Length: 305
Ligand code: DON
Image (cartoon, rainbow, N blue to C red; front, side, top):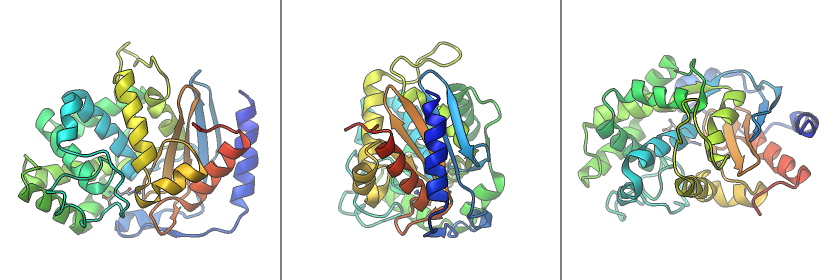
């Protein structure tokens, strides 16, 4: 297993020295303050060995990566009924698109585009007494990281500028697929996206999707094996929006990106890896993050295919 440390260091140096491409997200003003040179990687194996390089221990805004966690909790509550509210098809459109919603009568294509994640937030608002606190507690429990926090500044910054999400939520409500007050749902959505984690923490929190018989510190299962399979499948087909095919083609793992520049990817029964580099390509996915993972899975010949 020690081999992982050497490999991530080698690939890190190779990619770090390559020319940077892309731009830091600035449509959420607070995200634009990040140092674009940050670059970190962490891998955690199913034996819970952890290997890191670069800025692997610095907190950043995980943004859409949190959508895996909200989907997990909603799936736990609702079981298969959740698929009446949101579909499992790749959208082939940008993450914040409104285009297909009208034709699809307010049922988002998948839970990872913003429209789908907002519906998932609505489901959670229906189930949780204090959505923000209870969701954070769920994240702490499955990760065994008691210090996880939202970033207040990032949440408020997105709340003040998230016009598209406001439009999406209202539009979906007009079809009856948002049951709660739109302001409550959006407030929860913005906070959920502002969750901060390090690469090390990210590669730990998603062990429940990596290890077959994963149980929390309390000895409880997070979701069933079948549900784990399905979430991994949606990550593979929808985790990178209209670049999901490209990610599967180049990296070959289920994964999920966020506009903070993070990516997590999972090789079931082996490892979870997290990469962070804030500059994004035109599809909103980390440029160096994708490059790193492509080289890493090629070098280790580890992919699901
Ligand atoms: O709703 C938004 O636009 C952000 N809070 C999250 C978007 C995101 O991370 C898309 N990921 N690549």
